[in-house]
Image 1: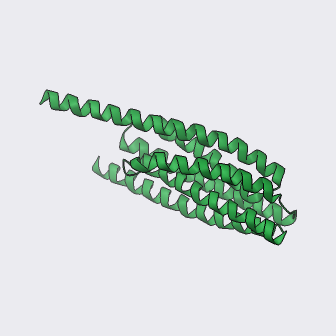
Image 2: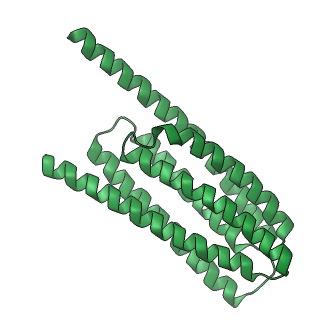
Length: 208
């Protein structure tokens, strides 16, 4: 019985080490893409790129929190997931503010810069999603991290579509339209993460 218990402990430690390794990689990737996306957004005058960059910053913070609570109890993980949902919501509000500002200061983005940055960001996001996918059902912590990564992939395709729209129409409205769609995606994701985390927290408290 002792050997079986020891074996389960070692398996759990190995799994937690794997989770830490995956989260460390996606944290580094998102921190790097945040810097790239914000720089490209400034150069290209793109709202959709800036929304993607802010999302990458929020994701980097999310993965850092996820990394901090690997091996922690369910209540701690649920609380961190609540905070992650709040971060996604904050990113949505930042996107809304950027869209409002751009409506008052219209400009045609540089679609070349948008396209290159969007392709690089999409490749990075697909890598993160593939790394997180095998662990998305492990717990609420990894599930919310995977949710953020899935949003990033959709965001990557959306910004590519915005760049194509700007190139075809020679106007800034496709960029703003895609930024608006991303705003809705962020809001939906924030509500899903918050709802899941709150349910997990209530379940743990009721069982305590």
